[in-house]
Length: 180
Image: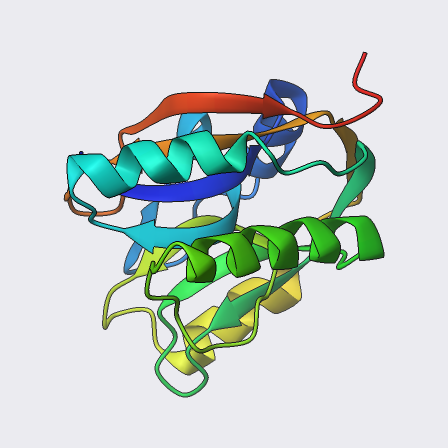
């Protein structure tokens, strides 16, 4: 199986609103709207047997549906920005869903990244021309707005190794409790 991760899908209306922020930043490779998502856990490249175990085990994750709020804009990378993103409010339900998945994946033997989870929607990946100054100026001129939606499921997604990420394919979908 290809590279796997779990995520929340970004509804089309929110994606379209975020896409209006595109442009005006030299060195930015803008993510296609249909590829917007909120990564929960990056899993990586697995053999088929472990990928099947992961897909089956995720079906046991029981968490309630919840409201997601996308708001502020920021960048990863500090003095050498790597990406600009729309921040997602780290509400308890979101953080508990992510932590439950991470614990499950560790128990299955999936090596996990050792960095603090920062929920976000990546808007663009940045090349060297997107200096810290240009990125800061771009961020200062844009307000991300405030967009909310109800997360009623999470998905197991796959990606092919490519420049800029994507295309992403939903391999499995898992309803959250209380989903409509």
